Length: 437
Ligand SMILES: Cc1ncc(COP(=O)(O)O)c(C=O)c1O
Image 1 (tube, rainbow, N blue to C red):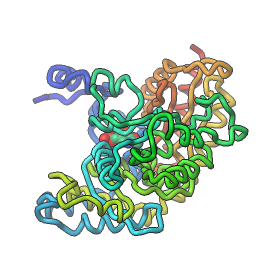
Image 2: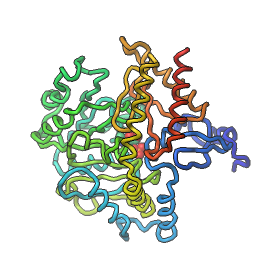
Image 3: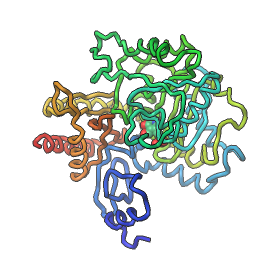
């Protein structure tokens, strides 16, 4: 037991009882959180623009969510849905099927984490299609379990030394316009990177053996890479023509993060299958696979499931999150937030040479840092320095990107004006500081 819960004491104990491979970005230990604020064990306050990696779209400890968790904890915490089912899971499936894109009958299953949702969506797609090949993308992140890790693109730190990887995964370049893999420029390129899928289906895999394509509408860990408006409809059409299922991994981009409930709606594409997690239940561990009824129905009885999947407390938390979206008009708030932050980030780009690109949709926004705007040499050390500088000033932000040089924001969609402005002012100070170096 730690007698005195200081961050220092906890760090020392941790070093003895937890391995270094499970790493944290800070040595501060948190005790509580509320809305857009977190408080460490020393009582210091931080504005949270990270939301536990995109989990807190409704804000920390939202009273509605807390109330639902407490209420359910007193009634029923676990029976295993496969042994004795209960109402909150069924209601949640009904709700999720209603809010996800696609004007067709859908069904949903619940599991415990994003990676587990990814594992299951691939199982379901392969079973339905009776094919095994899966197309994933460069810069993708889909989780850390064996199959999800294989689908993930970046080798260090996610995959390095953890092989052998799962078979039958084929990786294609994504529409990363700032660093176009085809050295073209939008819109003159005519989105050739999407048409490339036709060629890819000859050179890397074949339609007859390819079950699905899985893609994040805006790549999260990969650096908030945001394809142009034509991209996903082109990909979806090629998939349809070749009887390949289109899977949207909305784990980071979903639940209002882009000011639409799901990011793929910006492209007017209706995925066959989707994965949802993170902000789905405001920090309670639950994720979902939702998709076309006929695809989901392929699986034989007991073909999917798990001991904790669809935990009733988690389901109630997720239902409360859905209520908060409706009652607080969270999508509208997200739209306004996105516009405000975008404007400020565009100003930052004018002020600071180090910002090479500002991108994203709604409030899912990021800035890519470069040493030189011409060469686009990644400024990954500067990104790290900015994160640390902001942390010292009381703001939590996250870096991401395959090259480690992207700064992303994932604050609550209902963040107050005052804390938003304060957080942005700290970012500006941080940029001034790193630009001097
Ligand atoms: C797009 C995407 N898919 C899957 C995952 C994996 O989710 P989890 O960490 O809950 O396993 C993540 C996590 O960052 C993600 O961003």
